[in-house]
Length: 415
Image 1 (spheres, rainbow, N blue to C red):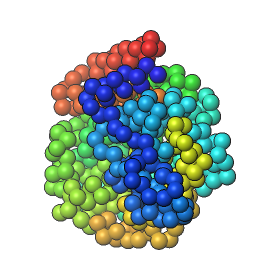
Image 2: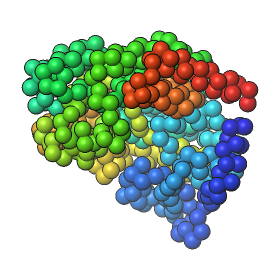
Image 3: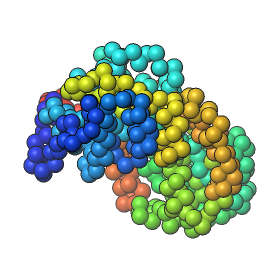
């Protein structure tokens, strides 16, 4: 609670406190206020759901700026909206589950089987079994690769063949060595992504479900060591973030593991390479990066109605429209298997990419992120950047990140 109070004070100081109770001038007998951000939901779906509830107005507010800070503020003030969207950082709010409606008390068990199990579980507090939000979209990860460069390097270029031969991180690194030796092209884009996407494939991350820190060994250490191996072999271009798009477009980078939503970023970043990219199963297995949720606040005066509207906004039917409208990758199994979503994509050589995304989405392992996943992830990313671009000693970087985490955990314990 002290953390939330501190954030509230900061929000007041910066004038960021926002009014979020039922809106003035809203039409209809009852108004349900919804907070989300641009493209977190398809606007037409919101209108369609509103039409399903006669006498109800959904006051849908696209909240810009520091969304999380404003959500913190609303939680403390107790006058927030009825429904809130949350990104993949929703797990950070499990420790404040009393601020949210426990959806398990509202019959959501009946729709549980409609959703990917690993996504469903991410919004449940393992200690209290409180479910604070329903899934919207997901971010299954795959291998994006340049088929022409793979062929030039003497590697398989067809998606099935690539998945079969490059099926582990060791095989991926070995292929990277071959790519660099024969073409001079880098297989990986940077160490941060190499580490992050490895972690996202693992069941064990930084914490157990009892919030015991395990990031000083296990899968975290293995992912770190793999990134250090990539660094030692100089398989990344060691460029700044702002230079990545140019490197993708000029053929300096042959592949990267990324989430489904990165396809559009790639298309914008590398238009000159259209038709040369393909996707296939990621070495090391499926993971997830990103994806959002929709929860109802305990402060809502219309909890029953807000829950029913939330269910409708993330239903199987709505998720199909969210995908077709703003390309939110579904979390409902029936939607993922909908034939309408399986279309050839010219940017990927007319590959039906949904086939690969769908398999990845179903294979993501069950996992637990923990209350401090976000801060800890940033500590690792900072040190990885120093190793890659500043030539910082890897062992020193590992010790430094563990020291930062130890201090953070101590600070949390003392609050």
